[in-house]
Image (cartoon, rainbow, N blue to C red; front, side):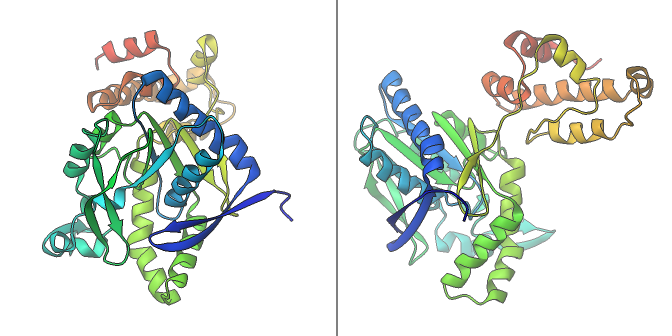
Length: 347
């Protein structure tokens, strides 16, 4: 026994009944605090609040949004939630039959890579989100049977909209513009082995053979998952899917201050996790021999190079549109330190 207490719920997903379960621990420690945070934002801002839930296919984003809707209904003091689905902004089948994508140096019909970001009408999504605060705005709905969007079906009535999708935090092209509309963002991650097992199980339930499911995973789902996890911007909050389908909070590294931070850039044994470059930098620092002194590192120009790269990347991300609050959270710097980094130029 895993020792967890589970709560089960039946939901309607894509016109079919779906039974889900979440642990009471996840509900109390993750789901309810998130809903309370969104409710508080609604009270403070006096308008509709938009939450993005991003993550690769297989981490249960849509089911989670539906459960949050039910949980808000059953819990006193929480504002109502309305789910929205990025799949409803997929290009039409006709569009994907006449457009191509370059993959591994070869042109493929877009319909053979339906889950990639190029398959979505980003312009249409941005236009729709620009009206999300208006009364009477309607969103399209994804029809699982036809794999097409039904335009302007869902009237937005509720004060909190929870939008789910793989690419909502993608840092490529014009996708970062979506962040301008989100009041709060959540990323859900999972290990490749968990994603593979869940997608294999889903495919078999749809009646596909193991070979068919495996081929689709290797040709499409696996590449998309890697792209989501490696090229998405940091979220306000990150959860990790565990092997039993539950969720746990991904712990943020403890911020470093003053002399502690100065020591960090000379020290090879610091653990830190960041989706852009801090993880790689830490691995390189960890590769230094234990007996190395700061002088040894400086003689090779190694530490200075990493420090300079850090500043260069901070400035580059700022130029590409990452706001200062996100930079502060991502790189654990205070406003004054960030201002210094943004002012510095390459010598």
